[in-house]
Amino acid sequence: MCRSKRAAVLLALILATAGGTAAAERLGLGQPLLEPQLARWNIDVDAQGHGLPPGKGSVAQGQRVYAQTCAACHGDQGQGGLADALVGGRGSLATAKPLKTIGSFWPYATTVFDFINRAMPYNAPKSLSADEVYAVTAYLLHLNGIVAADTVLDAASLPQVRMPNRDGFISDPRPDTRNVACQHCPAPSQ
Image (tube, rainbow, N blue to C red; front, side, top):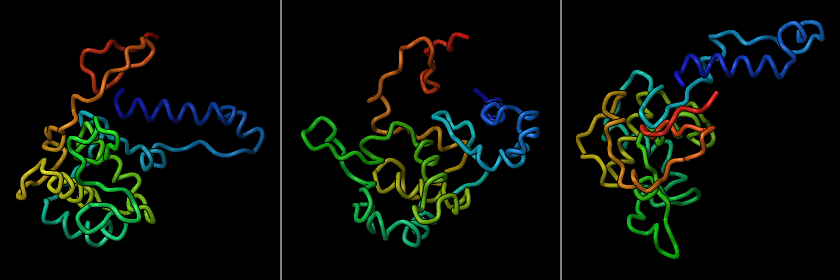
């Protein structure tokens, strides 16, 4: 589903939950969201990179941003600390003690960007610029041995990154769902 269609669906759901515009006005409850208000929250990025914003960031820039905003919780090299480890764990998923990190578990680099963009840093989510999120993503991918030290990521290059566990997930075969990461999955029935 394209971004604008998702926004329209979300807006319709919000209005329906409030009883529609007429009911909301009649009862004096809430107010309809305008497109610019909704756009601030419509920031999802899918596996193919749909929704990635303009911007770019390098591994070197990411190292600086990570040191300032991430290392206190995730460790200076992503090894973990107060929060989960982000680095390591390759080959551990089939063991009794799997370590699920960006390098061992995540199937798409674009969803790493999405998570950082919407939820990090923990004490100030959505506070990083798009450039900073691209940079931190590049740095974390580098720490996991996925991209080179001179890598610069942007909306065109990030979806091209092949994650080690890309093929470790299966598609949802139910006919009422569509795994957008799966190119051969049927569209949901209407």
